[in-house]
Image 1 (cartoon, rainbow, N blue to C red):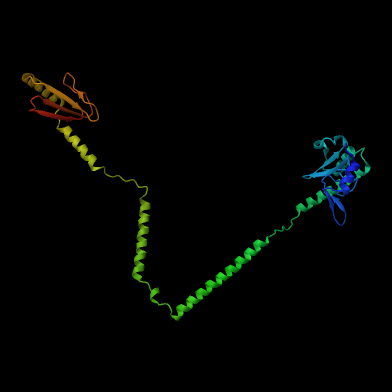
Image 2: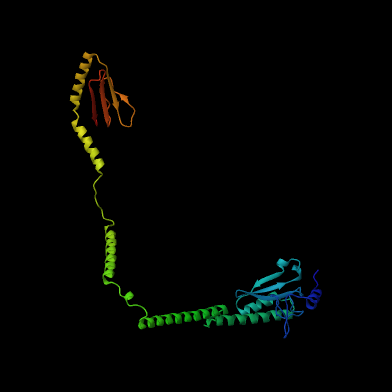
Length: 303
């Protein structure tokens, strides 16, 4: 069971994490404190019946706590949104805190007045243009100073070296021959660079141009040989007549004849009974007799 007096004695005289003691007084850092002062009537922990006002992104809410919800911490505070109008907000406070202590009602209204004034001042300040103060870390400032000093020293050193070289050149310490280059070698180098640039430009211009070139000599030679073979072959009728004469000679001589047909990239096939070969793209016909006296080979594209 909650006892307000016992809680106050403990947090007042022993320890309270929200208490802030300074020279001007003792203050409370609890966000639900209505006045910000650490005393018995303003402590939100030692009062079972308490009310205050809080601000959420420019919107004011009335928070109320009763002893009936003390056993439910997540539902301990009841929140009511207040209207933007100041007079209507006061009327809503009077409505919800009708039977509450008069002192607590007065403190809540005072808090509403102060928060309303603060919101008005914030809006006015937001409309004014003010200078923005940008802090600069000390390390960055020291680093920039060191870099400036090093740059100055380097500039002085370069200037001193330049002056020293000029003085040595004027006094004649360095020989003058090393500064007189051959004009012929210089012109030759310039001409080489110009020629290289012209070649690069010509290659760029030749890109995208369509040209026609000759074919390979080997392919042309093969085509000519095929045409010569085809022109030297006998016609189809002479070939058939020759076959008839050969068949008569073979019958008279009672010799056996074997006809073999070779085709490139194919299996060997024998001719038909009529002695006519099948039509193929390239056919080689060899006729051999038993005595071996006569041998004939024919090449043709089509029979």
